[in-house]
Length: 275
Image 1 (cartoon, one colour):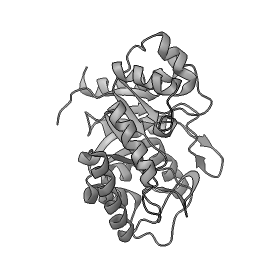
Image 2 (cartoon, one colour):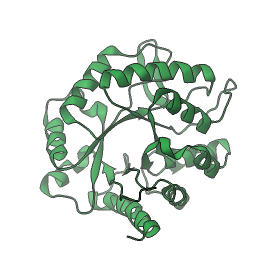
Image 3 (spheres, one colour):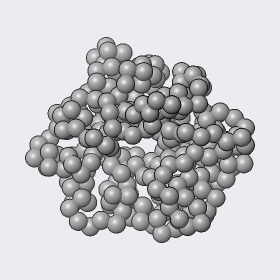
Image 4 (tube, one colour):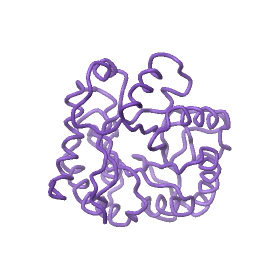
């Protein structure tokens, strides 16, 4: 197993553009952006992204592929995505293993789907077309969920692993989402990690959530909690070279505070591998 140090970075949000324009953040290796913020843009955001991409690797993280929808793939969206990918040349292109609407309507939410063999086949077929169109492997992220389906035939970790195996995609393993869903649905998050084939993991997400009392809500509005850091320590012991991004999308702090979270992830890696 290689222990070459992976990339550590954060999600780049508009509130931090002035900071990024004025100075080069110390200790960060790369940035992730929300794809849809740049697909139809020819203005300042895209210019800033192009400038950042000159100095750092970029991950394009989408929320509209809707790979789990019963609808056909959106050819217009795919064409726009391909144009942006060709322009930015990102290190990683990712989206979510979910559906975001139906009947041509976008619900602007990341919704879970039944974990069935039929859905694995259907999604793998769609992914074959997406990856052929983009001419690259993409990553799919496990989402936080608040409902389950009676139709499900397997666990989420079995489902996402089989989708990756059959399609050739990789897994963007969001450890905050694993923890949130484990509390909401009462399963052991360490079993989730243990059952995911580590060679399928292409990126790691870390984030914070809001405790609603009866359930946890994935808000990306707080620091990473100790329980999620514990999951990260378990995972990083097995996947030493997988890049990491910290997301913070609401109640966003000043950039140095956000960077601290990514530097904590880097510190944990260094302690594990003696660097």
